[in-house]
Image (tube, rainbow over all chains, first blue to last red; front, side, top):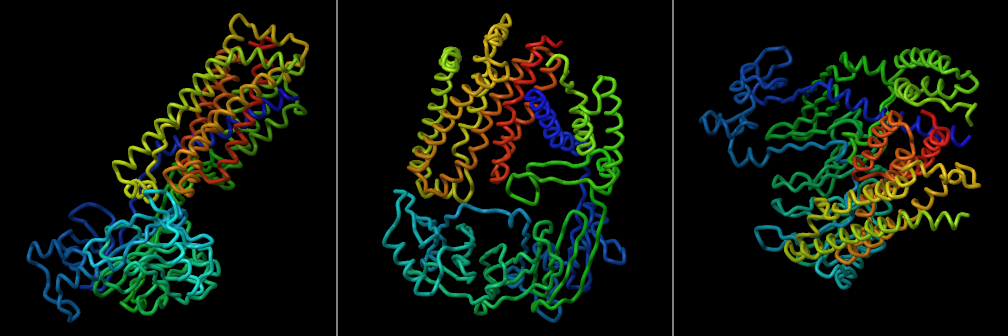
Length: 414
Length: 220
């Protein structure tokens, strides 16, 4: 009995290992690199430009299919390409009746991408609290890191011990501002490579959002007064000289808000159907427009808005991804499922199990019939070989490999 | 009977075990020296930034030592048994063969777990001297699969050694290697994955029974 159990473990080991490695090697050979189109909105012609290739002559096209060269593209996207145009002395003096000034272009241009694995990520819950008004040009890394558990604590790097005085000072201040310990989420931009510091946005245990920073050694803490039922999934805080917003707030149902400098008012992005675990959120901005896209493996959905986030135009496109190509169709027949330990959409290693769909049943059934004949050849009656048959039926080619490689336990010898 | 077996197995294993323990301690000492060195030369503040904000893996020296330990213990414990088929004599003791084989590997398993627990404890202590508890937890979580792989490599190696037929060894070996590889793919492992890997590693302990069954009956 134990020996049979041992054999079953051996079979499962083979099924487990092959369901990870065989599809992995298969895709290493057959996966095609699929270029995601880049979508731009020209402030010159007020229409979309879609870039699919790296070809300089057919650099991009508009939705009607008209092709443009790289020079055309730079002319149609003067704000994005202002450095090249300045070099060539081709930057227009004005656009939409507004003069084009380099400083203003630079201030208004930004782009940002949030990937699913940025959201499915838990950083170490220790953060440096910068002095946000040091009077120095450059930000400096502090000598301590803070955590917000049952109270706000500062741990000194040099001694690896608590700075009791500072901890007490901040904790008392936060309590006076009705902060409910512990923190649920702490989001900031802990780098010295930014123009200035806005500290951290912290979700307390009752879902109130607080803005916490340090000003001249003293705590600063303000309740942003956002609705407590937002179900926040992620926050991206990014200090920009534009000072329009502190950052982005993502909710689990798929809404994205700007946390604006206007008294922390939340500005909702005009998006629908954003799936945080699959879609890349991309925003690029210039003096006139905001281009916001949701991109996944086989589609892109773009909206262009004005500076008040009112929709001006939309663009959607989809294409075949690897699962729709021949290699993917073959894979869906051959592999009933695939296992992966890592996933592009998560920063954790875990089991990422993907079922292939009904086609794979055909493959598994054929292999199960084959297994039946193999078992007969091995003189194993169905009463003893049922596990092998079921294994092949449910795990297809992986189970078939296992049964093929591992002989059955012979009753006569036991 | 078990205590006699315990003594016999211990005699085979002890020098290799102390050797591997020494190697582990050297690795831990190296990590401790590195911690002191980085703190001095990067400054504590710079080193913390590298570890907390950038995920600098200052503890990676320990990575392959448990894997190696599992293999070495399995080899010193079971290869003498296979020499001139001495395992046959052991299997003729008045104990049921499966029980006997499981008892033999339980000894290796326990001493490995003790060693790995010691490694984890020492890591906890030395990392805890220089860095706060959040980092200690992250380090222990990241090193957990590297420690567990030692248990899996021990069980799988014993099954490969006891298996009498080369063709079957050749079948088991690549799948064993593939399985062991998974413990190293697992960067930033999720709790579920860690649990599953322990469970499956423990289940591989039964593989030796299938090999032993072939061995006892001389199945070619």
